Image (cartoon, rainbow, N blue to C red):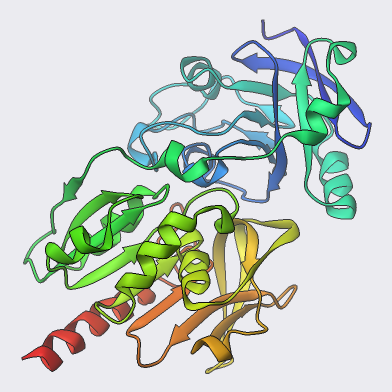
Length: 363
């Protein structure tokens, strides 16, 4: 199958011929690109890519194989995977299997041998668009491609029942992590700081969360349009001001919507491990890992009781909000990022300090 021809049909009419690897079949999805030079294991297992065809801009993928310990979720949620060149003979002492084997085992269509640079330029100019991967371009209806939309992403990626990630070392705090498609490293970073982390399904009611008497609440990353999650937003509203809250990525957007702000879809999103974000208080710029196609609209944040804390240094879109008096803050980027960068992991320490202050104020 590795030598089979396969075609990428973009919604704007462009067609690219490549070679198939991984699983067979045809698929339609939202085509996005990510600029990470490493971390493809984490990319493949990031639930935020649900419903999307993921294309790597870095030309060689698979050179260190698939490392099971580095996976960010229970499975992969990408619709398909596109690379310029795949490596069939990985060299790494931690390697468990090849990229091709992983895609086959997880029923993910792979495409290699295409000009990923040209496709990326098309997306950057025209914006994120839908695409089909197929063996016969004539068999695909253009209307089917154009009408595709990512739906029910949070319900599809969230775990179905509660689980516990115990603290590493001395237990200090109890945190509820609402799973909207959470990456495992969020719970790991909290556990490293002495937190027992109760990971709860996305549709857990506010009263059930508060009944656990947590010291703080984490709102995780996730996929899809944040405005689709009306049920989640309604429950977050009930939590605001009750316990310290820290939101990441989709959690950042949902918290803003719960506060009364608005979100918008970006032209081609921010995906990769090299996104610069500027702290507006200090003026310092950090390099961050990101994976999102929507952003919070700055206009209206102040009227919702928020203060913009970070902006994207490239396009000036919102990257963080503090909510003074509400014991809540959030960021659009990923401070828990694996395989990196690790520049902003101090935000977990900020959350710990917030829980400590809240506990002292309650005594």
